Length: 192
Image 1: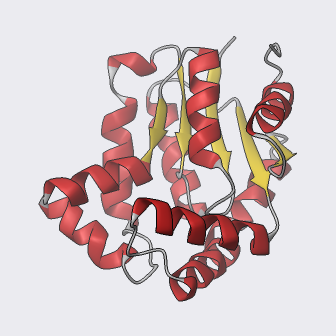
Image 2: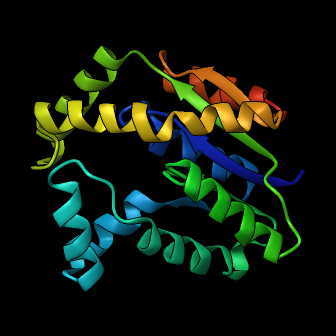
Image 3: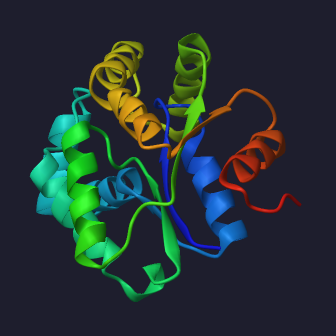
């Protein structure tokens, strides 16, 4: 089964957890721009300082930086059998860039899956995660701003993928295993 997938959903919907689980089940790498940004922030790289500057105020890292990073990552050998993108694309311009990246390799996206979740639930999840992990950038105001940014910039890509017949939506509320099974069903992968 080809597995070139995009995982969508608001911050706190469980994309990171589910991306790791799906990638393992499908035998493809989970590629998270958030993880790449956090690793660079922790490592004190130039990209990390830039990413921190934007993320600390709840803004997104500029497209040109993110696009170049994703293009390089998708050129890696471990993506030959597919990939699962978590956190990219975040806007319609990035959808066009992803299309171009894949077209350059003679490939196309197989499916976009959106994890849906109530904004109040994801806010609670993110505040709890901030306490547990000591994430200074996850304040209530920054979380609300991130959800607003998602609604205005990222959610429209769901419509675009739906118009292409590539979108499946999955309820992200429930147990981790239950959500994983819903996601596997949405992409046509065998359930456990």
